[in-house]
Length: 42
Length: 584
Image (cartoon, rainbow over all chains, first blue to last red):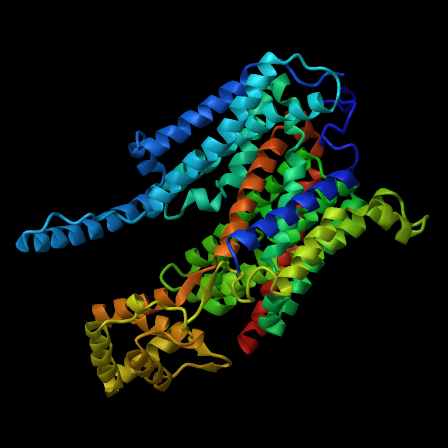
């Protein structure tokens, strides 16, 4: 997959920048952790 | 640009998932699942046997009293739960995929956000379907084959070559991209792999706790810290000198320094590693590790090393966790002392991952932008991967006990208080232990016990265990019908392995040990999420590894890995031979 093929993101990511991808994954991970704590409990 | 490709692929994938879910829920493929879920199925048979016996007794009692047969339901076994889980996953994801697949078939895509985000789903469903195949099919299948071939080969090839979902996921991704190519409709979804991998790395932080690190002996932490950080430093230095590229060098450093495959995977997004570089590093680690696994036990026996010494050496010098266990078992197939020590060292090594991730992130940013000439602080602020901070945040939260109490991080924890009434020892079991206690107090028994402790190098804290310790712990077990402390459990486990011990007393001690260990549901849930995120991410990454990319990696990383691996193995051997006897 070449980089030029995508106007948005890169060949490795659907996000326009690495930082946005990082923040997205951070939010997603925090939601998962919160879900685990709330559903499975301590 | 319009991204969504008009194709029935997503709809078909959805239907396949729904079909698999229905087959599981209806029990039509129980025969197939018995093969894949072998251990869960053997648990199922035990539960069924117990239920049948109880039902028979209850029915006979009801018949004797002229009452109707009782209405009893068999409790769910691990096998039932595994099938129900597969059905649930397939219904949820299959349902979503079918609906979105229908939308793609009937809708004419127009340029915009809806088109862009909708185009991601076919590729994601494609990877997820492969992840199901890997986790529910290939992973257990190789596990079964490895176990089946063990008596003939003498070792478990599936475990030693790491043929689990991590490696199999990457391999299947590589096969797909090089043999079949990635279909156009899936291309955009494959680009989500790194996002899920990063999420997995952040969640990984929740599985470490500084409290756990502090509990380990200071000298073992120092020894491992020295070799982990030392090897990383050497790889980084050699990589720069030999021009292997910053991301390749950093991934290799993490893999060689910490714990092999998972460390390489964890470090890869931190340093923007290309998929081919990760594959190359994993290949280097596994090839090197297999060599070590055969060589270490031979050297250990030649040098007449003790179980503790060999365990410490294998746990420090061998790169991969499964191979550490393999070498320890090859060295001492009948005892567990070597394996236990090796695992303690291995786990300690893994605990260095947060420090290593932070170091590599800073190193990469500095070298990638030539930060010697600019303000490092500014560059770090602009370029530092935020998700690494997420990893550190999770690590900090878990250290503060936000997820689970400290001591639960291995997934299993010891607690005498949480033992349920029905798990306490029964009268005939405590009587069997009483009889053995009386026998072990006689001179011949006491001598056999002392010899056993000496032979297996059993220690309590800093001193060697004595028969009096065992008498006290056995009397305590008889009085309380359960294990009270971890030390008592550890010592009595050693007693249970003594030759000539009464079978009932032995199984009673093992039962008490099993009852005192509990699974942490929270850690289990984190691990499940991690396994799925990594599975998904690695299959997607595998799909970006073309043969051309692998060729680009060249032979230099293999040389660096070999040199540093050898230095680490030899260095740790010398240190272990000189010091380990003194402080373990």
